[in-house]
Image (tube, rainbow, N blue to C red; front, side, top):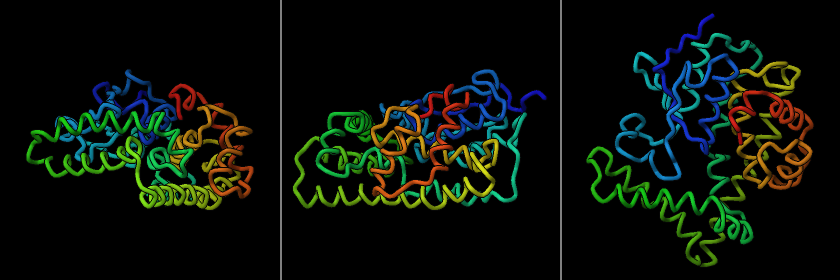
Length: 288
């Protein structure tokens, strides 16, 4: 069967984006070819390109992914983009009535947002590492773009850009200035709560989903729609613990356990992780 997405369908993405990985995996798993069936358009989040008016007209939230199909319909988040990819896929995943898609919403909950666990420190040591690493550099690149865009913003995006500028500056200041103790503790508490929520999700809904159909995937022997979201979230969450991307479960899971309170993590998570590491869709898209 010939793929139904024509060449002028576009996926707006960024190599460093977490949630853009979900439609990338979905495209690979369901039989689409990059740049043959779907054009990939890079929006450099580290340079704030997602806040430029031309992109905000495509996605007013200033986020990636955005999938635009041949009829001009825009799917402006990973949940709707993945769902549409599956509808058009030459080889859609098997749909299992026992797998609830409610876990997708749970995985996307802000309480354990992987973008937040990347940017929020949990203690002084973590703050120092983030100050000397990717988080500070990412925030600086965004701030430079937002400062420039906020000088003369289009009326329709003015409030949005000014708020983004203020919020980003506040987080950046935490890393480039010396905040007082109360500010530090409030920040660390937020970071610690994020990781606590990660642990609850992993030991709860994720394990339950993986066990329901016999594993190793939530879809059973093969990944399903739910899996495209779980692995996207899990991969970035693991990377945020400091583990090298692509590390096996024997390395990744102990670190994840440490960051989420030290309690045991069901072996199903490690099996799931290693099963994904072996899949071309994971390797070819450099999921992390």
